[in-house]
Image (cartoon, rainbow, N blue to C red; front, top):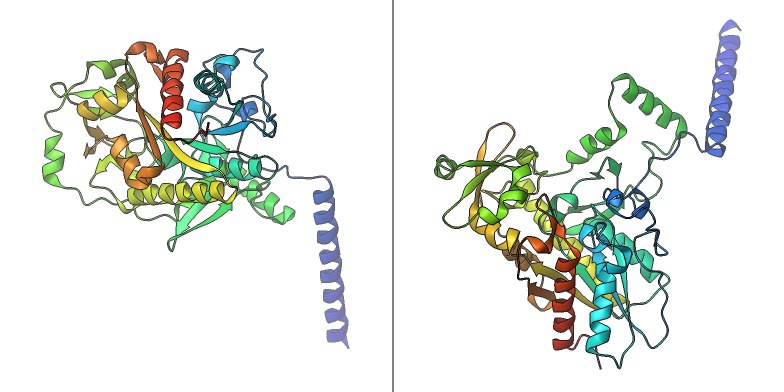
Length: 404
């Protein structure tokens, strides 16, 4: 009898506890607490928004910098999809690439009406571009989609789930298929709010950020970052003068075949989280992964575009600084731990290896410092963007991508 009473009390206690937990979970959900982790970003949280005029409030329907998606049935609609190059925070709103390209197309073919729109934000890779394109096509149409590639940083941005201290929707490439996106909706450490609270409390006790927690779990999915170091290649770097990465942009025009340097970086080259990672020799398995996921994302961007009856192209303006002088002068990279790696900083060749040649539009810019915002900011100036968009417009017409 006593055993029965004890069992009954235990069951009653467990039942009450379950009810209390269920009620607590319901109340937390009704209160939307703990608050969701912000996932992704647009113009409101762009890392480069501070460069823009404070009166610059032009946003499109996706919350991105640019004009509203307003067009008529007969208009030729072109999408510029990219990152900080397309967002162009250092240029005035009316001198963004979308406006410049629209103007050059209109002047070259006045018989047609053109509308050019932007899907971009600073720090985006092809992962965020793909999600924005999918959102756009749910409501709007396009005749041509142009992906403005940025091979200096697209690769590692496509690989990791955080950027600019934000968790972002992220894809994973495994078994020859693209999976995801992960962290696409309001991100919680657990869908169960009570468990989410417990995880957050544990992280706070250990003085760890939520972003770092998500990143630590994510990297366990990725291939090894071990490199079979080639002693001969390491020796290749021994006699090269070192140039700190923060001075690379400023000194880029001093490089040449005669002046070759080893760039000393604070970035995590050894774990493939660096602008230089896909250009290190020899590549690690994780370096190769950076390239493969970018190839897969480019392919998905193309199939998504063509499924909505639009033409697809990848655009890259070949620069006199990084693509010419940087390729010739940067020969080695030194990591924060002092390890030295031979590098082949050839962004054009790598881009050509992962995009179908028919889909790639290259234009070559001419000029010097006037093409950039400044000696420490190599984003295009208005002059640089204007030349790039003029050359792009000419190439679109030459390839008959804009039908008369």
